[in-house]
Length: 263
Ligand code: PEP
Image (tube, rainbow, N blue to C red; front, side, top):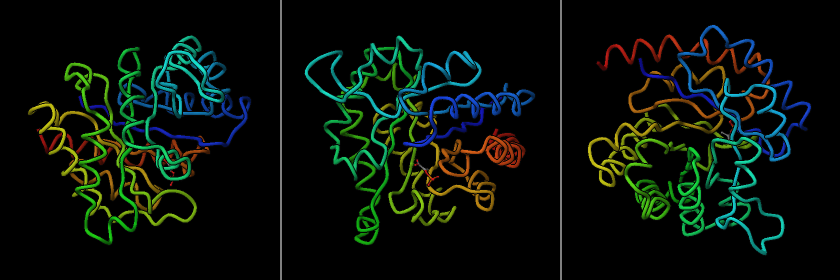
């Protein structure tokens, strides 16, 4: 049975105690469907250890970023060994706010991915075009570039077992974001899977591709009903455990019936 990928990035919100309360509640609410989910939460660095202590392996806890060296003169950065020691098992690389607010480049994302690959992390690479790139009709080229540079040199064995992609159009993310139309999102996912196939062969299509960007109670079902969308990566609408649980329960049967129909 295919698992539904659902996760949230809490950005620079939630103190450690609030993050722990969130994951504990989420685990409680989703306990009966946990086997059907790949459920993950990516809180701030200081919340990782307490969240892991609170829920253990029941919810995958990740980090929002990571430096590309194991140690060094990088004030303010965090390293793979530091994250490993506190129990993070997933690292998100290239979130739109890291790319566009903090000006990270594809080459930097590539170095971070190579570092995450050397360690045992699952890797969530975020890609997405800006509104301007979309208006120039270079969304596909932008996504291909982000994937091909970001994943350059990544071993197929690691990619096929530990890599997840989040398609998050920059114009769709956050309080000023406009959610992508589900058909457009599905078409971009189809393109991402084609690039993954180019990089890793037929099996590249199995790499999970999640949609993110203003997912909410109104659009979640429409998005998950589309082909090529393997899960949802949700910000604001998932910061209440109750609402996150409600969205998961609404999309799960739709995902299940799609999975059956595709077999
Ligand atoms: C995000 O920041 O990755 C995100 C998807 O946020 P939101 O759902 O709030 O747009």
